Image (spheres, rainbow, N blue to C red):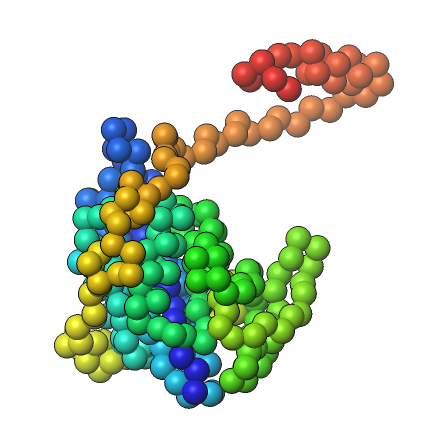
Length: 266
């Protein structure tokens, strides 16, 4: 019987947004939220492990009360419990402050054998929260897991992507895995499951229910980084094909090399 925790997040549905210049945060008011796609894969992986080995799946998320819609979607897919860490103290958190809050919540509702996270979120793209949660909980972690081969009451064997290919490793419980989208295709819940999920109420944790109640460790106060500017990358100008040969080609190339680069650095 495995006790599995899954960390999930709501992200903006659009890849562009306006910036609050004073606070250094994204203005999410008019952007519809969706469940982070990588997190749906982690939930599917948890549900498959539960179906194979038994146990429970508890979903954790940090955000405003509107994030309850994410947790009801998790209920519809098959999660047993859901926990929302919410309150003004958590607003504006960077990756480390987010991980610390989630780790505190996991301590309250645990212990868990396995914690699953998506590889990254589509809004921040830091891919740091999973590893930071493991650090705060003082447990081993494996990143970029593309396959979970087997699980026992003691641990699991996984394949993880690396800079040079793939690696197979055995990790003991308790541990944390961040999973790739290729690991599993998330199931689509039926209408009956969605209707039943609307009647279920996620559990809420506020600052006063956490082991560490110091507001300086959470949200904007507890963040070591601040976003100065967000923008979409500028599209490069289309390259022009040039056909020439011999000395003419050499002279053309030398001319390009002599041109000053943008910003004065080549």
